[in-house]
Structure formats: structure tokens, C-alpha cells
Amino acid sequence: MEVLYLGSLKLKFDLNKYNSFKNYVEFKEKIDYTFEVNNVALEKIPEKPTLDHDYVFYDFIFEYQSEKYYEFMKIMEGLGLKEQVVFRLDIKYTKKEMEQAPLLAMATHYNFYATNIKFPSEFGTKYEKIYTCPKCRTVGYKQISNLYWNTTQMKKKLFLEIPANFYNGSHAIIITERLANIFKEQGLTGYSLEPVIHVGKKDKEIKCFQMIINHTMPPLSEKMPYIIDEDDCLVCNKKGRLKFFPPYYDKASLDYFQDFNLSYEVNAGKHCQQSLVLVSQRVKQLFDTLKIKPVYKPIVVVDEK
Ligand SMILES: [Zn+2]
Image (cartoon, helix red, strand yellow):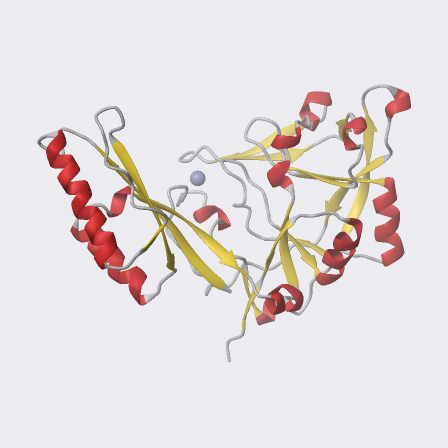
């Protein structure tokens, strides 16, 4: 696993910080030079700012936690710029990691909003709010009725993951009858099916089920790396929303799992509670064949001897 740090530094003209615009431009040139002498992999040196365009971005890449990364962060700190750096991590997995991890965290809900699909609450599915964090406002919902939904939205789809949402309810997975039959033929484990009640034109109904994942994994390993994040909340124990790294599990936690599993942690949603979905290699192979294309993150096994 290769972890890349993709950083971006924003430098904006501000009279409280720089005495004049000229002063700001000089500082910008000093930063250009800093990047250059330290040999930082920079997308490009930003152009000279103007009064109409009084900010610049430096986009750069490091191998995360490499010697160069630490050196450079120290320089940024010295210049008082560390707070102005935003970043994300880009993790590249090897073929071996992808193929040999006993479980993979799987997510398809990223493109839910892009595909313009409507939430079950809009069709009459009932939810109860079972948790509200007094500090960060994160909410948790429980579904208390069957899933009511217009199943026509399932055309051209076999599998749909509806993300937990602050306003609309909890995480749900819908699969078509065809996929349910394939799961059964393959003998996949760790789930049960509930009916989806079709709301809409009868002749447009697509037979679907709500897939309930029944098996919850033990907590993540204490050894999982952790980056302090703006979304952290100590009240509901929401730490970094599992956002940066793949899940780490102690070897002993992997004595027993099923084809479909949920994480014990419920921090995968933004301002709402949602567990991670963890699947076996069998599920991935099946989905590859069926051209269901989630984002996978192979879990890291922590083997403490
Ligand atoms: Zn909270």
C-alpha cells in the first residue's frame, strides 16, 4: 500500500497579514523559492497574482510520512502556513493486497446523489431518530416500517446502496430479484431479505428486496493509523469518519466473518451514522462478473505476535 499526501496551500492577499500588495507578491516569490530549493513535486508554480486575482494555490505531492514530508511540514510550520494547507490521502493498493485481503470495505453510495435517485422517505418509509449528538449534530435513524419506494428507479441496476442522510433516513441496500437469486445460488452469507413495497405504476414495478446485513465485525484494531480531522467529535466518538485509511483489523477479529458484514463503527457518514460494508473476495469476484463496480479498500490485517 502506497500512501500519497496530496496537499494544497492557498496563499491569499490579506492586508492584515501583508502590509501591501507588493509585500504579498514578494512573500509569494519567497514561497516559490522554498518549493524550488526543497525540490517539492509541485503541479506548477502559480502565476504572479494580480489585484483582480489575489490568491494562488500550490498543489504538491509527498509520500506520506516520508522524511521529505516531515522536513517540508516543518518549513511550512516555520513560515506560519501549516494551517493553510489542506490535504487528502491517495492510497494505492497492490494487486496482491486487493486479491489477498480476507475482506474489502465496499462502497457504492458515492454516486447515489449523481444518479438523481429519490430517498425511500419520499415514498412513505418511516424512520425514527434514535440518536442526536449534542455536540456535532450527527444523527442516527432506525427504519421502523417496510421500505416503500418506487422500484422503477432500479432499472439497469442490480444493486443500490442508499446512503444514510441527515434529513432522509438510514443506510439501505436494495437488490433486484435477479441478484437475490444469484446470491442464493452462490450460497452467500451474512444477510437476509425484506420486501420492498413498490409505490408507483404497477406495470413499472421491478421486483426488489431490501438487503439487511446481519453480521457485525468486532471493533477496528487499536493499531489503525489515525489523523486528527475537522470532523472529529469526542462526544459521539466520531473520529476522522474512517475517512483516510482502509479499515485495520486484528488477526483475532477475523476468525469469523461472513460474505457480507458491517463494521462495528458507525462513523462512515457525514453528520449521520452509517457503518462500513465489508465483503468477502467471493462477493468481489461475483460483482466483477456482473459489472457492479463499487470502490473497494482491502482491509489491513494486524498480526501481533
Ligand atoms: Zn458528535
